Image: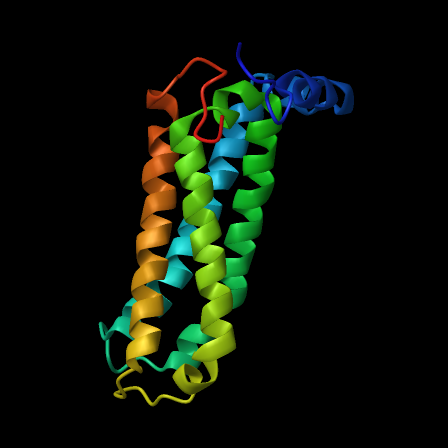
Length: 175
């Protein structure tokens, strides 16, 4: 006997229908518009986070960490665009995502990236912001930057794989 799912896709879909998300996302321009927002957000996020992380690793010496850190609000805007558009995708077709191993790995990669970011700001951010344009980042900051880049590459990769994995809707890592 198969266990009851932790989250009911029927309940999510009913809510999405009731509040109008389902109708909008399944309209002629809904899904393509939200995908465009998602990709623009991804470009903002990866452009900012990627540049900052690469500089911490040692690429593009000569760029000021303070100047790169001023891009963080744009990265946050990109993440907000991705979170909002991702929420619309998920609620309009929850069964397509919830039990999909690519989505589960994408969510895990986002979780790792978030924890890694908190670790950065709790441990090495102050030292990194004080670096001059030619200064080398501490080893801990380089490791954090590497984990960040790997996590976000994972998010992108697993996001692209979402459409290639269409498992039975009752398959998941935690079931």
